[in-house]
Length: 148
Image (cartoon, rainbow, N blue to C red; front, top):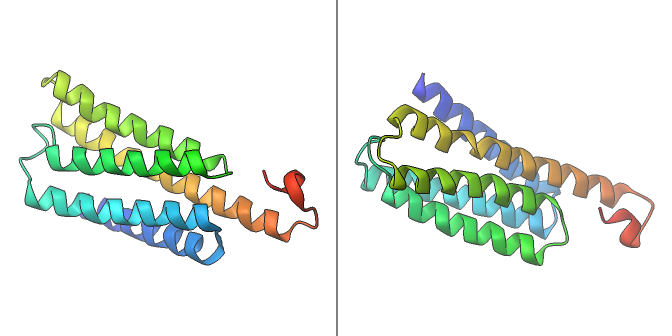
């Protein structure tokens, strides 16, 4: 079952990143790159420093902090709304790390599932942002009225 979930995530990740790279503007492409690189670094951190989900994942926590900083920077410098949503979704994932560091009685399965869950709303935010960008570009209106 875990392999199926991992393959599903990989498929969705590649599909959304390809769509953002093909149809998105610079914020969508940057968000897709952050998500893709963050996913690769998470796999590297999980296989290199794997203590199991019974204890907090220090390597994944560091990667998540870097991804949070990157999305926060994108939200500050972009003229789109979706980076704010994606940053907030990822902030929840980082907060789960902090909660597991503060209280070691957090169940391992709940910790693992909560970490995996928030990647899907993040990918949905990038896909919706790309869709909105594509429709803005196709709109005959220009200027601030067509921006958002």
